[in-house]
Structures are given as structure tokens and as C-alpha cells.
Image (tube, rainbow, N blue to C red; front, side, top):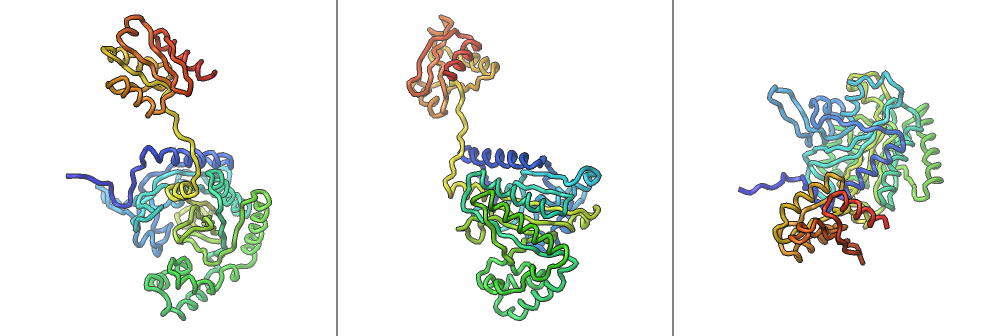
Amino acid sequence: MSFKRPRGTADILSEDQPYWSHVYATGRRVAGQFGYSRIDTPTFEDTSLFQRGVGDATDIVQKEMYSFQDQGDNPLTLRPEGTASVCRAYIENGFQSGPQPVRMFYMAPMFRYERPQAGRWRQHHQFGVEAIGDQSPEIDAEVIELGWKYIADLGIHGVKLRVNNLGDPEGRADYISDLDQYFTERIDQLAKIDRDRLQRAPLRVLDSKVEETQQLADNAPKSIDYIGGETKDHWEALLMLLDNLKTIYPEFSYDVDHRLVRGLDYYNRTVFEYEPSNAGSQGTLLAGGRYDPLIGILGGQETPGIGFGSGIERMILEMKKQEVMVAQPAGPEIVVVALGDAGVAAAGLATALRAVDISTVLAPKRSMKAQMRYANNQNAANVVILGDREVENGVASVKSLTEGGDQSEVALDAAAIAAHVRYTKNQ
């Protein structure tokens, strides 16, 4: 019997770990610069959290959730997205009684049963942020700016923002009605998947990946033509703030795209996506929007919120595509090479060196040439050669593997060897 990883999952191998480390470190740093603190929520939640929060008519709930009954017959679901869980935590932990807004970020695996393709996995990982408790356009601009800086600091270029305003739920009826009528009159031109979407949620048709539907959607009613009052003031203020970002970040640009709707029911007003200028249909790097109704839907006090999610796998694919260089991990400071009968002494020395905070690897017992080759493959800074003569005389041969490095005899003592390699490193 042979075992393989489940379809739609991936092993993150050592050669890719530098990219993951770079993404995680950049996300933490940028979130911290904007005052966001980390939150970790459970990997699985009550199924109804996502049914109510994400929406029964969404593709996620209809087709993609990993749901199961536990041994206590409780309906549970592996987390398909991060926002509903963070909002549940906001309500359950009484965050509404503290200073607002509450700024949080997460880095976590998500699970969706969908057709695997480049950058889209059944288990994937997201970096996301949520700002809950502020309805101002300034917080919208802040979250959008945070997403921009995260992408830029990863070293990715040529990315453009698409932004739209969906209006508010209570004022959206006329827009949905006109949109439904528009597509119903052209239903013979829609693919079956979009005819089905039209029956469930007309807004979803605008998000279609079918080219013929996209062409129809270009001339469909626009949501921004249906907003007014405070919602319109909010939208116009946000566009002014985005114009200001263009003066500060030379590469930043945006387009208003009335086809942008996002795929979840809880969004209202501002929605946005970042994608590379040469992206295909699955090219979105980061996306989000405002979800003012969600806290109330989940049983909390009506509380505004905005956030985004960003797939890490897809971000790394774009980094590789653009040939972004990332720092490679340093090798061990020392590889201990044992000759003759010095194996026990070499193992003891390796342990003693680690105890004084010197990263140390013991080479596998082979010929000296093979052990030296191993040390070079490990990208070690030094080798410590220990043979019968060295053990008898109480010394060790320490050789630097840097270009032109010296070889010296040092007392067979971990503290002495540590002092020697640290001194050599700082020269």
C-alpha cells in the first residue's frame, strides 16, 4: 500500500520554505505597522456560523464546505474563510465593550472543496486583516493601503486595485431588481452555471468567469448609480483618499469596476481586489470589503467592519513569476567531521556546542571527503575536524568554509571553539 497526499493539498518542501517565511514575516510586520494584532481562531466551527454569515446561496456553502458530524452529533465545518470566525470571536469575547475599532490579523489554513488549479487548493492558507467598529471611509482606505503595502513589500510589482460600491442592503432592492431583469431578458445568452446563479443571487452573475457573461455584464446596471445620501458621501470620500494614496505610492493606481461584487453575502458598500495587470481569471492576489451587516447577522450588536483575505499560495506563485528574490536560510555555523574512532567524542562536542548556542550538525560517518562535501551542501560556515590525534591532544581543527578561510587548532572545548568562530565571523 502506498499513500499520497489528498487531492488539492500540497507538501510545503524545504526549498519553498524561504518564500513562506518571507510572506509570514512581511504580513506580521506590515500589520504591526498599522496597529493590527494577531488573532487565531479554531480550525473548525459550528456549521451554522458559515451558513448564516457567508450565506446559504453562496458557492462556498452550496458546494465547497468540508462539513461533518462529530461524535457528539454536532455539525461542524472546517473553516472556509476567516472573517466569519473573527467576527464570532469579536462577539463571544466581548470586544465591543473595548476601544473601537478593533484591528486584528490572522494567518491560517482554509478549506474549500473546489477544483484544484494553480494557486487554488482545497487546503490553502490566507493572510487576512479585519477592522471592526469603525464606519468611516478613512478605515476603508487604511485597509486598502495595508493590502497595497503588504503586496509591495513582498516585492511584487504591476498590481492594480479594482474597487466598487455595492450600496447598503436596505437600498439595494431596486438595483437587484433591475439587474435581474437585465439578465433575465438575455438568459438565452447565459451559460448554464450563470442561469443557475441568476435564480439564486443575481449579483453572482457579475462575478462570472464565462467570457460571454462578462461581455453582457459590462453593460449591466451599475450599483454606484443606485447609491445616495450618506452612502454616496462615504464613496466619494473614499475615492478622494485613494487619490491621495496615488500621490504617496508612485505605483499605486485603481479603477472603479462595477462588475466587482465579491462572492459572499455579507459585503456592503466598499469592495476591492488587487490583481496583477497581466492576470488571468484566477489572478486575484488580495480581496475584501466592508461587511457592516455581519456582526448583527451573527447575533451581536450592529457593528461596522471591513477586511481582506489574501491567498499565500497564490502570492508565492506571483513572486516566483516575477522572480522575486528572497533570503535563503543560513546553514549551520559548524558541521563536526569525525575521523577514525572519534565518533563518540564528536557527538559529545556537537551537543556541547549547541548548549552554548552554536548551531551544529554532526556529519554522517563516511570518508573525510564525503563529510566535507556534506558540510558544503549544508552551507555550513565552518567545519570542526576531530580525529584520534585531536582527541588525544585535546584540540580540534576548525576550518572556515568561506572563501580564503583559515584552518586553526583550537582547544577541544565548546566555549573555546564558540569564541573562535564568533571572533572569526566578526572580522
